[in-house]
Amino acid sequence: LVDLARNDLGRIAQPGTVTVPEFSTVERYSHVMHLVSSVESIIGLEADMIDLFKATFPAGTVTGAPKIRAMEIIEELEGERRGPYAGSVGYFGLNGNMDQAITLRTILFAEGKYYIQAGAGIVADSIPEREYEEIHNKARALFRALDMVGEGL
Image (cartoon, rainbow, N blue to C red; front, side):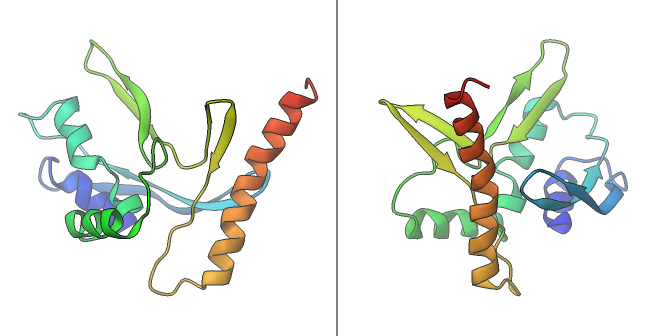
Protein backbone atom coordinates (compact mmCIF):
# COMPACT_ATOMS: atom_id res chain seq x y z
CA LEU A 1 0.00 0.00 0.00
CA VAL A 2 2.86 2.36 0.76
CA ASP A 3 4.31 1.65 -2.68
CA LEU A 4 0.96 2.54 -4.26
CA ALA A 5 0.91 5.87 -2.41
CA ARG A 6 4.55 6.52 -3.37
CA ASN A 7 3.69 5.80 -6.99
CA ASP A 8 0.72 8.21 -6.93
CA LEU A 9 2.81 11.03 -5.47
CA GLY A 10 5.77 10.23 -7.69
CA ARG A 11 3.72 11.16 -10.75
CA ILE A 12 3.87 14.87 -9.83
CA ALA A 13 6.67 15.11 -7.27
CA GLN A 14 9.99 16.81 -7.74
CA PRO A 15 12.51 14.03 -8.47
CA GLY A 16 13.91 12.41 -5.34
CA THR A 17 11.46 14.04 -2.91
CA VAL A 18 9.06 11.16 -2.21
CA THR A 19 9.77 9.94 1.33
CA VAL A 20 8.17 7.67 3.92
CA PRO A 21 8.76 9.41 7.28
CA GLU A 22 6.46 7.02 9.15
CA PHE A 23 6.10 3.32 8.33
CA SER A 24 3.68 0.80 9.85
CA THR A 25 2.95 2.58 13.12
CA VAL A 26 0.12 0.91 15.04
CA GLU A 27 -2.84 3.17 15.81
CA ARG A 28 -5.60 1.81 18.04
CA TYR A 29 -9.23 2.83 17.73
CA SER A 30 -12.42 1.73 19.49
CA HIS A 31 -13.10 -1.27 17.24
CA VAL A 32 -9.99 -1.79 15.11
CA MET A 33 -6.24 -1.26 14.93
CA HIS A 34 -4.51 0.18 11.87
CA LEU A 35 -0.98 0.11 10.56
CA VAL A 36 -0.37 3.70 9.51
CA SER A 37 2.33 5.04 7.23
CA SER A 38 2.97 8.57 5.96
CA VAL A 39 4.15 9.31 2.44
CA GLU A 40 5.32 12.83 1.60
CA SER A 41 6.79 14.68 -1.35
CA ILE A 42 7.39 18.13 -2.75
CA ILE A 43 5.22 18.67 -5.80
CA GLY A 44 6.78 19.79 -9.04
CA LEU A 45 7.24 23.50 -9.68
CA GLU A 46 4.59 23.53 -12.41
CA ALA A 47 2.03 21.54 -10.37
CA ASP A 48 -0.75 22.87 -8.17
CA MET A 49 -3.27 21.38 -5.75
CA ILE A 50 -5.55 20.29 -8.58
CA ASP A 51 -2.68 18.37 -10.20
CA LEU A 52 -1.93 16.81 -6.82
CA PHE A 53 -5.55 15.76 -6.37
CA LYS A 54 -5.74 14.31 -9.88
CA ALA A 55 -2.53 12.32 -9.35
CA THR A 56 -3.65 10.86 -6.04
CA PHE A 57 -7.38 10.34 -6.54
CA PRO A 58 -8.80 7.82 -6.53
CA ALA A 59 -6.14 6.54 -4.19
CA GLY A 60 -4.15 3.58 -5.44
CA THR A 61 -4.45 2.20 -1.92
CA VAL A 62 -8.20 1.87 -2.56
CA THR A 63 -8.27 0.86 -6.23
CA GLY A 64 -5.28 -1.45 -6.37
CA ALA A 65 -2.74 -1.61 -9.15
CA PRO A 66 -2.34 -1.05 -11.95
CA LYS A 67 -4.79 1.73 -11.10
CA ILE A 68 -6.60 2.21 -14.42
CA ARG A 69 -7.10 -1.52 -15.01
CA ALA A 70 -8.11 -2.06 -11.38
CA MET A 71 -10.79 0.64 -11.74
CA GLU A 72 -12.06 -1.04 -14.91
CA ILE A 73 -12.33 -4.36 -13.06
CA ILE A 74 -14.15 -2.69 -10.15
CA GLU A 75 -16.62 -1.19 -12.64
CA GLU A 76 -17.15 -4.61 -14.26
CA LEU A 77 -17.56 -6.61 -11.03
CA GLU A 78 -19.44 -4.37 -8.60
CA GLY A 79 -23.20 -4.42 -9.06
CA GLU A 80 -23.77 -0.82 -8.07
CA ARG A 81 -21.75 2.36 -7.77
CA ARG A 82 -20.02 3.06 -4.47
CA GLY A 83 -21.52 6.51 -3.92
CA PRO A 84 -19.39 8.44 -1.43
CA TYR A 85 -17.60 5.28 -0.25
CA ALA A 86 -13.88 5.40 -1.08
CA GLY A 87 -14.34 8.91 -2.42
CA SER A 88 -12.95 12.05 -0.90
CA VAL A 89 -14.15 14.76 1.47
CA GLY A 90 -12.10 17.89 1.93
CA TYR A 91 -11.46 21.39 0.75
CA PHE A 92 -9.47 23.38 -1.78
CA GLY A 93 -8.46 26.73 -0.28
CA LEU A 94 -8.08 29.96 -2.22
CA ASN A 95 -4.59 30.21 -0.69
CA GLY A 96 -3.46 27.00 -2.42
CA ASN A 97 -3.93 24.75 0.60
CA MET A 98 -5.84 21.51 0.29
CA ASP A 99 -6.83 18.78 2.71
CA GLN A 100 -8.64 15.60 1.71
CA ALA A 101 -9.73 12.44 3.52
CA ILE A 102 -10.74 9.17 1.89
CA THR A 103 -14.29 8.25 2.93
CA LEU A 104 -13.76 4.64 3.95
CA ARG A 105 -16.19 4.21 6.84
CA THR A 106 -19.31 6.13 6.05
CA ILE A 107 -22.90 6.57 7.12
CA LEU A 108 -25.16 7.90 4.41
CA PHE A 109 -28.72 9.00 5.17
CA ALA A 110 -31.02 9.05 2.16
CA GLU A 111 -34.76 8.68 1.71
CA GLY A 112 -35.31 7.93 5.40
CA LYS A 113 -32.70 5.16 5.60
CA TYR A 114 -29.16 4.93 6.93
CA TYR A 115 -26.57 3.16 4.79
CA ILE A 116 -23.35 2.01 6.42
CA GLN A 117 -20.33 1.29 4.26
CA ALA A 118 -17.05 -0.27 5.36
CA GLY A 119 -14.45 -2.35 3.59
CA ALA A 120 -11.11 -4.08 3.86
CA GLY A 121 -7.96 -4.03 1.78
CA ILE A 122 -7.72 -7.28 -0.15
CA VAL A 123 -4.17 -8.26 -1.09
CA ALA A 124 -2.54 -11.44 -2.40
CA ASP A 125 -2.10 -13.04 1.02
CA SER A 126 -5.46 -11.96 2.48
CA ILE A 127 -7.50 -14.53 4.35
CA PRO A 128 -11.12 -13.96 3.26
CA GLU A 129 -12.62 -14.83 6.66
CA ARG A 130 -10.33 -12.35 8.43
CA GLU A 131 -11.16 -9.60 5.93
CA TYR A 132 -14.88 -10.27 6.42
CA GLU A 133 -14.41 -10.03 10.19
CA GLU A 134 -12.48 -6.77 9.75
CA ILE A 135 -15.33 -5.24 7.76
CA HIS A 136 -17.78 -6.12 10.53
CA ASN A 137 -15.48 -4.69 13.19
CA LYS A 138 -15.17 -1.43 11.27
CA ALA A 139 -18.92 -1.17 10.70
CA ARG A 140 -19.65 -1.93 14.36
CA ALA A 141 -18.30 1.50 15.36
CA LEU A 142 -20.72 3.15 12.93
CA PHE A 143 -23.67 1.16 14.26
CA ARG A 144 -22.65 2.16 17.78
CA ALA A 145 -22.55 5.82 16.75
CA LEU A 146 -26.11 5.56 15.43
CA ASP A 147 -27.19 3.85 18.66
CA MET A 148 -25.67 6.69 20.68
CA VAL A 149 -27.52 9.29 18.61
CA GLY A 150 -30.75 7.36 19.14
CA GLU A 151 -30.10 7.31 22.88
CA GLY A 152 -29.56 11.07 22.89
CA LEU A 153 -25.89 10.85 23.88
